[in-house]
Length: 131
Figure: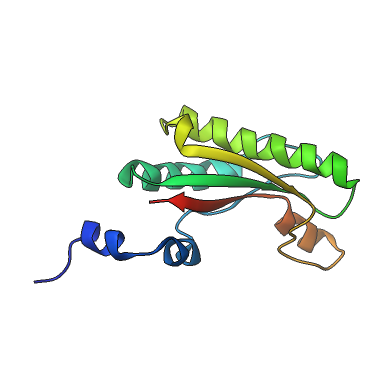
């Protein structure tokens, strides 16, 4: 008899779940922490997943591009992560399941100095901390 979706999920480690990245990153404009229109669909899909798997807990990491001071970017990263958290809470996800972490410009996804790369670094990224 095949395993149920619940049994398959139960067998996954946190590392496997994070490697699969079922929650999509959301991206931000330069020097902004407002949720963009193109992020709303991704966040709705993420909320669906979180509603389905109610035992999960996540960190939302706020990331920035390399421009600006480390101190400024840590603050901006926090504002971005909080904006994502508030949006998910607005979609019905319990706030106590979501932790906010700012990575500032310290963990770039892309390391080239151009707009295409910077855009990938201006993001809210999801990490599962419990399942």
